Amino acid sequence: MDDLSKLGAFALLGDADPVPQSLFLTHPEQAKTLMLLYEVSRELTSILDREELLRRVAERVKKIVNYHVFSVMLWNEQAQLLESAFAMRYEDSIPVRLRLPLHQGLTGTAAGERRILRVNDVTEDPRYIRCETGVEARSELVVPLLIQDRLIGVLDLESTEPHAFTPEHERMLSTLGSYIAIALENARLYEEARENERRLRSDLDTAREIQRQLLPTGAREVPGLDLAAGYVPARELGGDFYDFLPYGQGRLGFALGDVSGKGAAAALYGSLAIGTIREIVVDHARDPAYMLALLNRRLNGARLDARFIALLFAIYDAPTRKLTLANAGAPYPLLVRDGQVQEIRLEGVPLGLFPEVKYDEMTVDLRPGDVVLFASDGILESENAGQEEFGSERLTSLLSAISPGDSAQRITELVLAATDGHSGAGIAPHDDRTLVVLRVTEEASSDFSKLPIIY
Image 1 (spheres, rainbow, N blue to C red):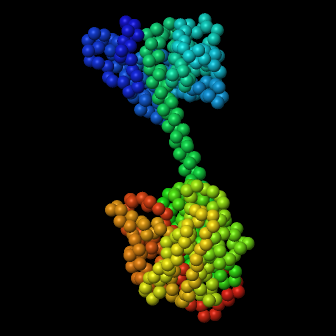
Image 2: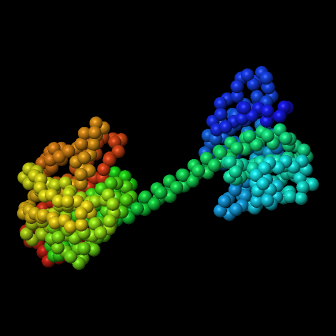
């Protein structure tokens, strides 16, 4: 066969074009070889599973070069060793566990010198290291697998016949070797990406569970108060949060916050806010306006650029049925009384934007049957396929229709189900949905001397 180097114009580079038909007329044998190389390279670079890739390489190389043992060793950069990755004797996979440094044995020499080694009789070459393959090798062809000059591994062919490999085999495998190297690197990067994704998924699952456990389920020993919360993050981790806080005998504090942004950063900032609120309450269980001002100074001192929190803070006093509130940029709470829904209009600057902010507060006298709903903007802004928001009108209609026997938990479930129904199946939420529902009940003879128990 003519020297294939004369056909350099048809060398395969990247996603090469098929072999020109005219070449089959002028150089039929070379054209068949190039066509086979073209087909093999196209096939190999599309396989991302390493085990399948190496098996397919072994099958396809067999069509080009006859061998008795086929093996691939991959370069471990960290260990600075070539390590067996795959071996096949005739048509059966065989276990081979070999680790070699560069310049040791024929494979280490080929890898270290970045050049093909063709040995006509290994029994006459002192560099030869015999492996337990079940085959008495006589000749060997080692092809370093390179991407530019970066070592990926080596392709090693052995034959029981001396002089089994030719210069022509060298040239063909040299061409194919670059594609095998790329295919192996693609497979490695794909597996690395999959492993990173698995690790990230595991980390997110753990973080989500930690975040879930930070949020309380409810509170008891608050006479005359039925309480429930709902929390549905838009992603694995949410930027919304809520908390219930013991505020003395017969008194319970509430916080509902919405961190700007989404994802892990927002979730961590929300966790920081929860921890800070709990710390402040231990030493400074003061009125809501004071609490927001102090919390704002603490969060502003953290100096997290472009992060702020919209937050409602309220205290319910069970003996007097008074609800005292302060608002730092959150949606207005809603009071449901006798089938009528009204906003508790109270405004304020979100936390973390300015170092010194004063907040207003308001006290609402509640009575049995009243329902108060605190909700993040994700409730009102839930969108359907037509980008139409759920909106205050739908929420008001739903709340005005609740019955006196509906519990706080039932009301929470109704609101979340309504937003789900509005968005429709298959519509990914664009924001977290969080709400806290307070329902005042009649307590004829109550003991207000106990501290609330958060669970």
